[in-house]
Length: 184
Image 1 (cartoon, rainbow, N blue to C red):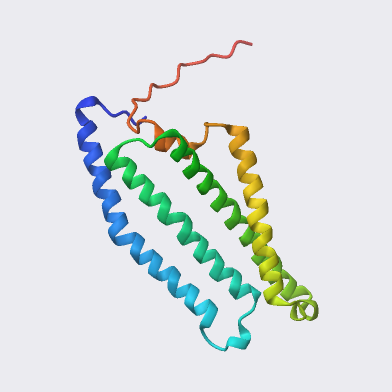
Image 2: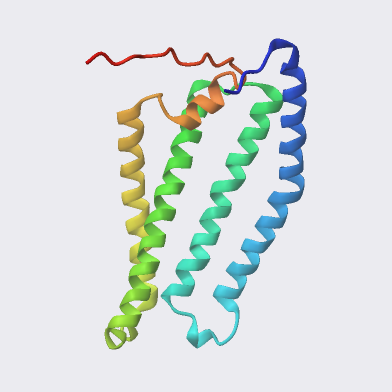
């Protein structure tokens, strides 16, 4: 069990600040630059006639990852340095995180579906209108992701993990579970 004693609280908090700052100033810009490179290559690299719906979806996946990770890491950094968030901001951040995860999962499913369509039914896949189907899947992901996220927030209320992370104290001493014996 991880149990932080009151005398170690400041030391653990300092270590968390150092780790978050190093992630923000080293890892985050480097990762964003890599994703921007992938987006640029998928949209403009090579022969423009070979840019298919698959390439558009990969670049959209990278773009959505940037939009998901940057606010999350920034919010966690602000949380560590300045304390907990107000309830409404934490709820909106939790909704944004779940919404982004749902949209990325839907997009990965659609990428696999289109790749399988290219493998098994090449003639039908080659005749697809790529810009139309990309716009359709983009709109579909927006709507379905929004309603699934809304349903999850409504169903779970304030029991979201991200919500707890943003609004509660991070260093609460954890008591070990009590022993339970089964009687037969």
